View 1: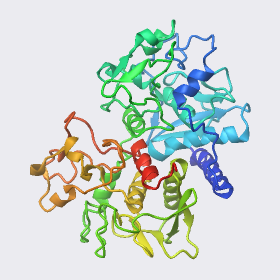
View 2: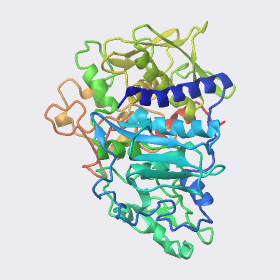
View 3: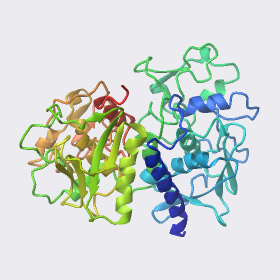
View 4: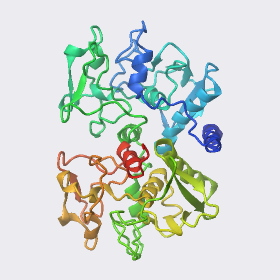
Length: 490
């Protein structure tokens, strides 16, 4: 598989990002008010095709619903899963960019690599058909994904349909859904009941995810304006509002396709920092002896806001290769897509971040004033999620498992912690900004963090077997906290 095919998609993303920065806005025709399921339901309302669960095209040759059939997955070559694609001439240049940006979002956090089709036999073709729909899993030969123009071409909708093509079903039809949501059949439109039929899914050891880009909204297929789905834990919880893939969506792709080389941020950081002699707080935070910035409540801890945006000046040292530099830039641009943070190249600003290849992966907490280093050791720390993790520290956010209310959600097993590492689990009087405890945060430690005996140091109270700290991207709560801390919605 020639690397040029991957580069073509990557270069397109970089060009789009340059256009984004020059125009001062985000290059996207993303509908900010609708989640993927609402977009799909609206566009598919008058379809005569028999679609399964609203946007899944049935394969009459085999039942691929649970994606357990032989050949349902796309093949892996080495460390990557190469999926050939075509985009028809139906789309405008801007719509094409939206599709490509959605595809490249998989490159940033999974081992899926979309490449331009040449002589490949099996491939995806994106076209403007009637409605938004896809098959589940690999179908062989030409496999269409319909993205109707003026209706379906949004990043979250493209991600949603592509996840179907990779083998994933809707969240609310997974096999264990009855433990988490109520299906209110009395409110469902006649003839649409089959859209709520459970599937014997492979849940890959991941928790039910109300924030998945694959989850229906509360009023999906409602006949009377009343909810058809409610969360058992909180009937008023808003469902299906995802603007992009969640950390669980990403984790499932990585597990289904055995992307073991895609590590969570903590394991990357712990490995890189194993021999550091500096006294780091909580594993990767450099202490500031001038003031106690742990809870980021000290005056000047936040970066200043100018108008609608928080401009954070940055500089890079010459330590990094072009590829490493691109990884850091993509991680920074991920904040542009969903928050009011805007990273800008330093000119004459006195306060700025400097990314350099130091000893290990670490950052200060919050704005420190003047030159503020973020260490991203080469050959160890330069990964999308690790950069996001350290930048979140620099913006003022702490690790999830040390937040002030953590004892209501996790158990810290002190008997399993390495001697001398107990302080890494000390709680902080954090400002939780009205957001729930988030097991999927890119700031959460994994179960065996700093373990001395291979036994878990952190377990979830609700489910001791829950896998923690495996995020390969910021979660919706991570994003919400940045937006609330910096008042991005005001």
